[in-house]
Image (cartoon, rainbow, N blue to C red):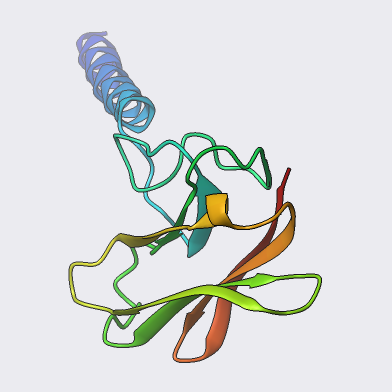
Amino acid sequence: MQIRIKSFRLWIVVVVILGSLCLSILLYQLLHPTRVQSFDLQIGHQHRDDLPGMLDDDVTFTNDQQLFAIAIYPDEPYVQLNQKAKLTVTRKSDGKVMQIKEEKESGDLAAWEMPLHNTQWESGVYKVVFTRNNDVIEQQEITLK
């Protein structure tokens, strides 16, 4: 009988410890922003405060405020950050290049942005392309109204 009580108490202690550990992991995941898992391209007016990115990331905008295109890098160590990155905006109707920005990547790069000159452009559809060493990483079409 004495052995069963000790075994039962040990079992209760193990369950409490494992439950506490699981609860701690769950709370950590809920309270901390997740890591960026892949490259991303976001376009919008308002920057996020907590992570690189835009609060109003979208594809359709009224053309009355400056937009920002932001290239976001993953948090993975396998990404080599010594390449030439580029953001290019072209007008879809005729392929005219409206704006280009190049960036030499560095070891601590999480994201970089290009303020767009969109208020000087006419309404229409535009293509924003994020490349690294001339390889297309992300692209997005936006509509200015």
